[in-house]
Image (tube, rainbow, N blue to C red; front, top):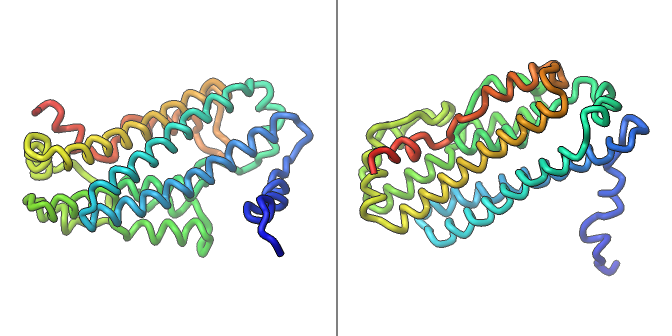
Length: 258
C-alpha cells in the first residue's frame, strides 16, 4: 500500500480518539487540548532524554540546539492555556460532573517530566494502579539520573571539581541546593562562556516550567474558583503549593553572588 499523509499520521484513528461524555459543545475542546498536551509532553520527554545523553557525552552545541527546541515547545504549551481560557466557568460546569474521578494530576507523562527535571516525589507513584503503564514508567524514572545530574557529568568532563555528593547522590531524591556546586557554577559563569550559556538555557527551562504552573493555576482558578478539583484534589490550593519550586536551585542561588 502506498504511504499517504493519512496513513502515515494515522489520521483516521486520531480523529476517533475524542469521545465526549456529554453533548456539551465545549467538551470536545477540553478533550483535544489535553490530548495535545500529552503529545507535547511525549515530545518533551523525547527531547530531554536526548539532552541528558548529549550532556553526559560533553556535546555542548547539539545540547544547546536541543534546549532551544525544548524551550520553544514549552512556550507553545504555555500559550495553549489561552485557548482553554476561552471556555467560561458555566461552559466547563456544563460537563464537569461527567469527568468523575479524572484529573490532570493523573498525567503520568507530566510526572515523568517532573522526575526527569529532578522534582521527584516517590509518593506520586501511589496515584497510579500497581502494574499500570504510568506507575511502571514513573518507577523507572525515579531511579534514573536527572537533567541536573547530566549537567554535573558535563562539567566534570570540562575539568570542573564537581562535588562528590552531587556525582554520587541518591537520584531518587529531589535535587537540593549545594554550596559546593554553587562555587563551581560561579567559576563557570566567570570563565567559561559555552558552559555558562548551557546553564542559562537551563534557567530558561526552569523558569518556563514555573510559568506553565502559574498559568495553569490561574486558568483553574478562573474556571472553578476555590471549588474542589476533579478527582477529589483540593484544586487551586494544591496547585498553588507547586509554584516557585525551582528544579535547579543552585542556578538561582548564584545570582546574588555574581
